[in-house]
Image 1: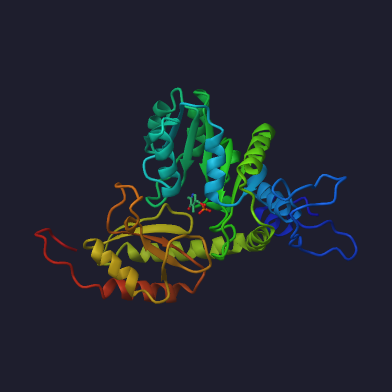
Image 2: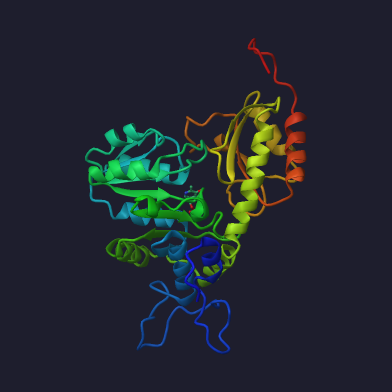
Length: 364
Ligand SMILES: *Cc1c(COP(=O)(O)O)cnc(C)c1O
């Protein structure tokens, strides 16, 4: 196998079977719960060849050792399960709702304490990390697209002895490699851009700390959060084209957010300057935003992100979404379709929304 450290090559070469005569090019779906005794493989909840190939690939991309889970949330819960009783967790103000709700549940039950912080304010992160066990970063955040200085945040958290986790689902290792910036753990919802085709639920943790990796693997086994071989195969297949998909979707995101910035029906555009995710606030209230979501024909009104198809969603339709997210905010997940088709569809949906009733404020 090639020694290249270029991610575009690694995405193609990592996690392949040994190159010997008649070996399959791809790691097959090994559908077995149990393996004949005498070797390393014993039971598929612990380890299985297809999941192992996915882990080798994710580890190569993030520069660490990966443990795959049955979902991003299962991976998140494995990390939380290891916290000592009463641990202080520092988390973003507005971020992925599943993790936000889970942290709230654990805090309400007295299991942990949670401090929320603006992740783009490193000084605030420094103060919040005093006596903390875990700094849980998401960058860019979902769905407000706040960007953390990962290296500086890791330094201030480590000065307080806190473990630093970065949920890298939005950026993917193509655009951001948190372990290289000093983070201890990377979390992925592999259900999103890594698998890339909206047909898999899967998660992963990646770390350079061998002891942590073993602890996560043990959580995976004991909590019963192991992925299926079939899902691991689909995710692995998706990863082969990850760099290409990100490049194309990012180009679409850059191009369309630039046009949205001057659209008369758009009051605000959030785009961090990189990546495949953005958010807009439409002129008018939440009903106006809903109408835009209903009117699109090429874009799909659906939750999730990172697939080849462009999705949009008014995030506050979910009761669990943070109050900090405006009611009229629509999150955009850019796919790989032709940019002019995406623009035409979105522009039409925005422009044909009825003009909001006069509120006395000056409207653009
Ligand atoms: C979807 C998502 C998760 C949860 O992953 P699942 O695979 O759906 O369990 C975690 N973090 C972020 C940023 C996500 O988008």
